[in-house]
Length: 123
Image: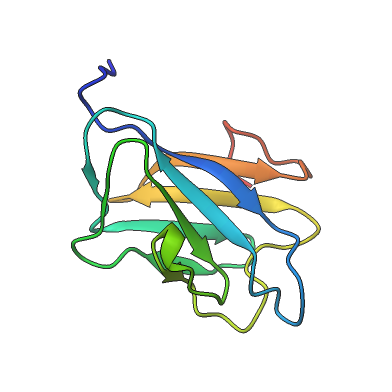
């Protein structure tokens, strides 16, 4: 059972329609809505079905109420400075699913443009 003195990390937003070639300003936003910090070492973001994976750098900690954004190919320090570093589109405009994974366990997932994806089943 979740208590307020524990971390609670979720995917809070996913921007899949970016601007320009490769859509560098696409992002997935991670939020710690809990009451304690969470070390994201070993956590990854997965883009389904494009197959892009972002591993959080060792020692990355998200504080209570803090948001991090992982951009396709931009670095914005005000949102943690995190990027896939991809010159290709990470989030398909036609729809897909973003996943937050820790040690093989799907912590949260975020389907968009629901093309047969949902919060309880894998694509």
